[in-house]
Length: 263
Length: 263
DNA sequence: CCCTGTGGTTTATTATTGACACCGACGGTT
DNA sequence: AACCGTCGGTGTCAATAATAAACCACAGGG
Image: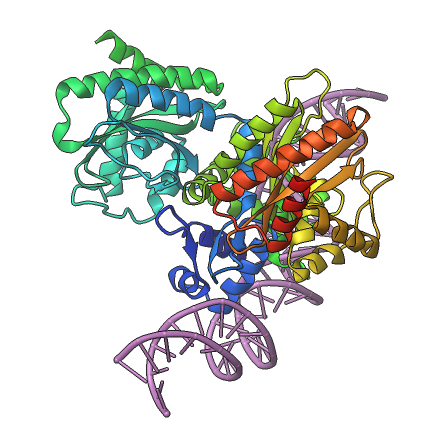
């Protein structure tokens, strides 16, 4: 099932903001791969700069190679920088935390965050992996994605992140139908307690969702006023973003956005 | 010799600013790996978000995963952002292009560029891989690196990038001895014709070189005045950078820098 | 002094690779 | 239309390279 390089690449995902350096044994334990195998893979990945070993400690961390690759992608297809502008306007206008994520394999990769300067706000870790089924961003991506992408995503077990997470794929598919009609998605504490998320999709040149831009609000503070305001702001930014990255929104989304604007 | 994951990771290095999207057959040809194998690897790497296939065309490109990983590294160990400030001051002060690179495996990864606004300037591609033996940045890293690192780097064939490139490892080792005494390295068209590079090392917390910061000048424009001015500016920025990233310069480098300041 | 943790290395087994042939599709020429 | 070369992708099967389990040396703690 899982090939050799899949095991190697899966090691990369264990590195996070909260745990940026990990040792050999720890990685072996977490990945379920044999220690010797992990070691060999680590050596190779260090050799290619994806990881690096601090000569100092015996820990491994993400290497300079990932910075280089990100630069290559960003200079060829500038999306990260384009998103950041929208995120800053969103958080400034709404006073809430905004974040953007891109489709990355079978999940979403957070590639930008702009936190509000308010005292009580949702704090997000940059570079986090977001599940597709429990986040507003994920729902909105699934809603406008190709059927085969949805099937692949929902074929895995849907992990219950909170007590409100939808874990039944058929219920979730019905939910996606609603999202297709409204053009945006809401996630009321389905991914994290006390966090209410609202998201709209951003499209690729081929009409499939490239990712999503979202606003996260402390659940207790969400009002129908803020909700409406947020959705309007998101639709506005989504249009700019699609223009900025050359994305072509699907007809379904354009229709939904038009319906919202009219209401 | 070359392991499976090494072959897979080597595919990533074929993506560059000038060629950000590559097809299956092309990758198979360039890497020398069988087409079927390359395809299997590409599927896996797409699955983990390191690559992505434009649904539109049949080409592959670097995926959103690399942006995410870069963010994770950058939030945990901010170096890219720290370097950018120094590069901007360097290019502003000298009117020449400045760039920074980090040790990445057995080579250097360019992670920052600041081009001067002058008409005639050296233009660098961001995210390029720089050889250790033919660039000023490489020399200065090798000069202060641990012996085993130098040996590994020089064990491979030294490719002649220009007619002036040093390709003999023993001659190069003698050159490194000079660099150790001066604290900076110069590369007069040894990596690229008409480009004169000057570089100083930046250190890691353990006293080994983390990378280098360099200025690239059109060779015909280099004068002894500009040279002296550049070196002084580089030493100044190197000190700030070492402080900024918590690096501890080796005693050898500190001594060399002191000698230059005194002269 | 044993016990458990670490990073790292060895060897028999097993799963992965690579060569090659093939498919359907696309785009030019003839 | 028929032909040609290319593309992305799939299948099979022998050979090879990766894996897993055991093992080392070392470091700290009880």
